[in-house]
Figure 1 (cartoon, rainbow, N blue to C red):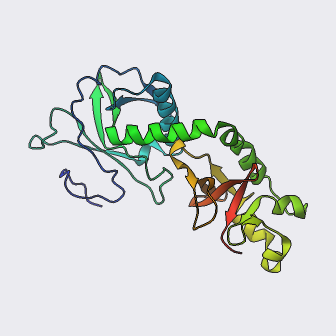
Figure 2: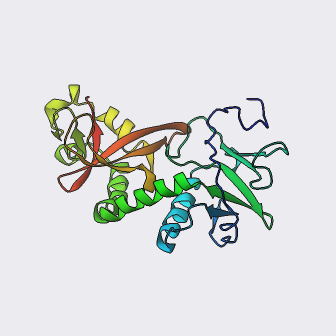
Figure 3: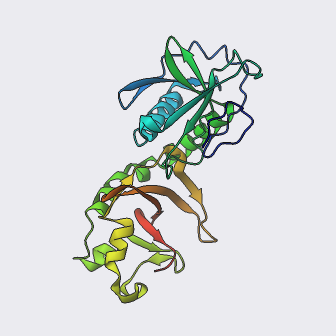
Length: 255
């Protein structure tokens, strides 16, 4: 892909930049920093009425997301002098990669360099989206707190105990825990390859949790989980998890 400095040109996987004014009141907030693979970055919040706890949650979530993205997959495009945002922001941010591992609502657009450090500027829209997502995750904190243990157990998954293995799957079309008859030819190896021991699960961002119906079934808490094949770090995919009957389970549409 050729590099362009025209902000009006759509670039592949470019996260849409949103004009944010006024920003001057937020530029003083340069203490919202975090480490990205050993490099310090900052955050500027365009939504100025966010509480401290919300800002902390956003900063920690961004750090967690970026921990799965190499610094080498980060590009910046300086703003030209004829750009209407010249002098207000320093440029655009773009993440590259064969398959992205960030949530769709993870919208970094502009950046601002302050005292030599790159600060990601979060638009009002992104701040509002984050605040809404944090309210949801706070509401279901107990359920979400149990997800990491579920994913860890999935990565150690084997079909030795058939019933325990099947308990990890929710059959969407039949709206119940999967049973042996749901799996053609007992295709455990394919299940492990897709959902379990052959992949590393990328813990989801706050932005990836949702509560609602999936294709007409009863509403539930759910999230899309990124996966990386242990044998090939470039082999990235995703699976869906749902919180049903007090437990997390992988969602299967059919076998």
